[in-house]
Image (cartoon, rainbow, N blue to C red):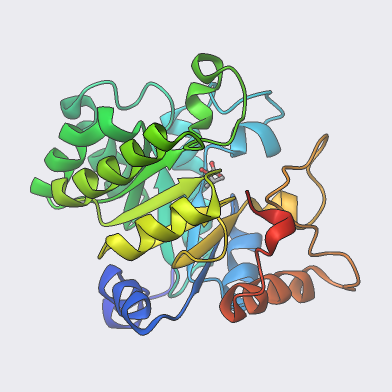
Length: 271
Ligand code: KIV
């Protein structure tokens, strides 16, 4: 069901930048279908990500690697149908951005077919040229540093990144380079809170954290984690917001409120 959505009513990149400048935090969450997209937007979530985490929480795979461009397209179309104003961001799946040209072609197709506003790409410094190319062609991007789940086998597991001084320094430099190349947002996953705070202060673009402490501009979590329906071990950085709540709406509203008040994440959910 598509309803008219004028751009001026939408959550836009300049709007998120303004929140950053005012020191106001914003809440992001993953969604994979119409009903949950609608529900989480009504609870105040500003940015909705169709993440390749769908490979794990929807498809039951061990990693995000099997997720295809068509999977993202399908879920994005259903999510878009549920949104009125929230920003829709899509993950570029594994294998869809092996060169700047391939990424440009795939990102163009994704945005054209789903009406999303932003694509998110893992890969850090290796995606510098791609970020530059996307920017040149008018495609908004969110770079992704820290833990990169698509590289889980190369990284040898899901580990906190940037703990060593040299790795931390490298991440600060890469973040600046990505901003310079034209990234519109940066997502930091599983990095020490102090490092995330330093990067957030240095950058003009909004920084979204997951397992990156409270001193970033926005927070994101996987919907199934906060609703406590994820199978298996839960990541330390996530939180069961269903606890003490009697509905999914109450749990998501609680998440949004805690993010905006700076109460989530606390130290027990940070590194
Ligand atoms: O795929 C995903 O859901 C993500 C978030 C965990 C940030 O990339």
